[in-house]
Length: 108
Length: 111
Image (cartoon, rainbow over all chains, first blue to last red):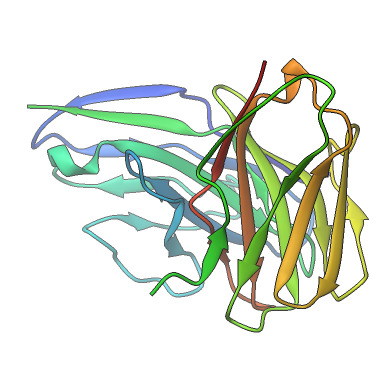
C-alpha cells in the first residue's frame, strides 16, 4: 500500500536559517511526488512536483528513490514561508495519498 | 480566477440533519475528490469520481455519500450529521496526469 510519512508535525526555524521538511514514501512502483502548501486562511495549493524539477519561492525538492524520500528544502527561511506543508504521492490514475502535514513556523 | 468553488465557507448544522456540500469546477476536469482535513490527521479521502455518475469510496466513506450528475459538479452528502463529522471539507479536481486544484474549503460544525 502507498504511504507518505512526514515525521515532524511542527518545525520551527529562525528567519534566515535553512529549512528542510522531511517526506518519506512507500511505493513499489515509479512514484510521482508533490508538495502542497496552505498559508493561513488560504486554499491548499501546489508548491512543486518532482517531474518539473523547478524551484518555487526558493524551495526545491529532489526525489531520492534509494532512500524513498522527497524532502523539501530552502536555504534561507522567510517569515512568509510559515504555513502548513503536505507531501503527496501519485501512483498512476489513483487519488493522491497525502502525508499528515508539517506546520512550519519561521521566527523573526 | 477561482477554478474550484465550494458553495459555503462556514456551515453550522444540527446533529441528525442531512447536509449537502457543493463543489463546482470550471476546468472541464474528469476527476473530482472530497477530503476532510483534521489537525494531526492530514487529508483523508472520503469519495472520488472519475466520470459523471461514477463514484468510488475512499478511505473514510462511512456516513457520507456523493452525487455527480454533471461533470462540473460533485456533491458530498452527510446523510445524518454527527458531531464527529465536524471538520474542514476540501474538494479538489484534477486533470489526468497533473496535480490537484483545491477549493477554499467548507468548515462544517455539527452541534
